[in-house]
Amino acid sequence: MRLIVLLLAMSMSLPAANYFVTIVGLGGAPEYEVQFAKWASDLNKQLETGGSDVHVVGLGSTAATKAKITETLTRLGSELNQDDAVGIFLIGHGTFDGDEYKFNVAGPDITAHELAALLDKLPPKRQLIVNMTSCSGASFKVLSRKDRVVITATKSGTEKNAPVFARYWVDALRDPAADADKNGTISALEAFTYAQRKTAAYFESEKLLATEHSMIADSGRSEGIRTITAGDREGALAAAFPLMRPASVLAKNASPEKQKLVARKEDIEAKIDRLKYQKAALAPDVYKQQLSTLLLELARTQAEIDR
Image 1 (cartoon, rainbow, N blue to C red):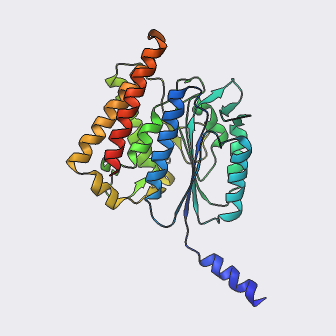
Image 2 (image 1 turned 60 degrees about the vertical axis):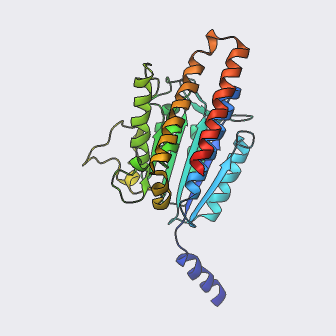
């Protein structure tokens, strides 16, 4: 009996931890397979710099089946406690048939209702899910719950183009400018605000019609909102949800040399997106050659940034 009491006391005294799960869906085309995998890898690397209390689980496109996602989140449900925080990040393609949102994974797709059921079973009171797929807005109502921060890359299920929101979500964790209140911590709200602003700027700079409009809510409302202002009911939980505490990393990335590299990286990524829009007008071998050149240049630039 004493042993049981001692173990219970020890478990109650364990410090709260942050658990993050990054799930990559099917790309459907080589360029998306590479892009989605890179975004997920970069996201995981940034999250892992958050300290010893951060635990990151990554499911790549080949491993991220409905069964594996269910197994992973069920296992976490048995390991986490209510004082922990959990964040789920979906990167890839989504579909919406007018009734049900589905995240496209290897084998049977997983629906928003199935994802919500898995999240509902997780003990942590602090929950975050960031759905960065096409049609992700259609999942908002289903995923939304009181005390859960929900972010989607699109406002509805009719925005079907592959979003670029995920790219800027990752950038938010390594750009000092994302830390709006300069407290050394990047919150979910700060990352959302940064990624939303950068996404809008991307479409404006490329002179393209915006095909994605990110949304956020954390009060359980069925529809997200685009902008959170001071005094709003929404956003308090997102502002208090830390993604990382990267003081040293931000200082390193703040150097002029790093900023030039980041600017070069963004330019290359914009060229890749522009090339995708031109794909139908190019010969397959020309498109493949140009894409390979840009991806290689992007990898080299990222390697310099990570040094």
